[in-house]
Length: 94
Image (cartoon, rainbow, N blue to C red; front, side):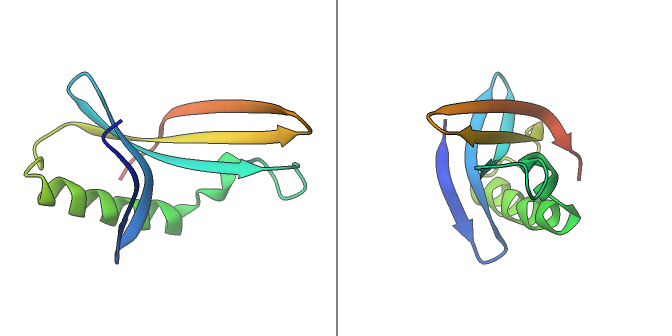
């Protein structure tokens, strides 16, 4: 893990990590019930664009524009004391 809660005016990224040579930008969504759908579905096109703009800032700020990267989503559903965690690799492309 390289960064947590990376915030810029353009957007926010919950986690920035490295897996091998790839930078991974991770959006974490948590819910207590499925009343509003699965949490991974909350990362709509608009949210993806904001994450992408923040990722571009991070890449430029650290001179990493040529570094391979991907966008993942971690969906957490809480049910009482238990949690279900789903990691969706390459959840979206920009």
